[in-house]
Image (cartoon, rainbow, N blue to C red):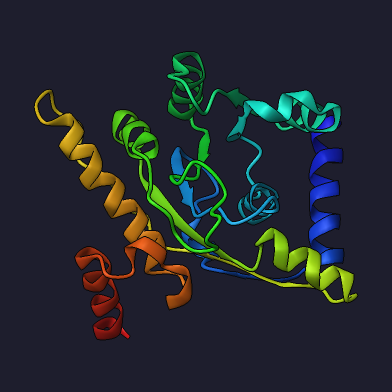
Length: 226
């Protein structure tokens, strides 16, 4: 019952306070394990992922600072979220997330690790690539625009609903991690994930990856296939 109430609130808030566009829903399987990797612009992003996916078995890692809020603790319990220490090696949270992922769940992660203060892509961290490669499951990039906290607040103050767009790309997989050169491989994997997200974003949102050779390669491939 608690889960249904939480999801009802999420859907109600997004429908009432945003003009929501969703693209690429066909790329989100209704069953099976995979990782959703998205950019992170504002506080609405996690709610948007629940809205877009529609899966009951979402695995959401939630920053430990939100444990201080009774409201956020309630939401975390209802959606079976996992609080994680962003500034330390939280192996317990990682093991729990991987266990649920291997049992068929959908792990949602933002490789940037925090909301972007530039309102564009910032450097990704290797946690997503490590967990996806470790579990051996597909990754689905999701690009979000319009959820920047300042823009949302500004629009609502003017009694306007901000336009929010979520776009899911095609699934891809990473090679399994090997014993040697793991750090180098994780950096390469992280760039691949971030560039896949970047390829779904408008140019002004591509940030530090705007000139990345892999992103340019992906964009050229889109032009040729289009």
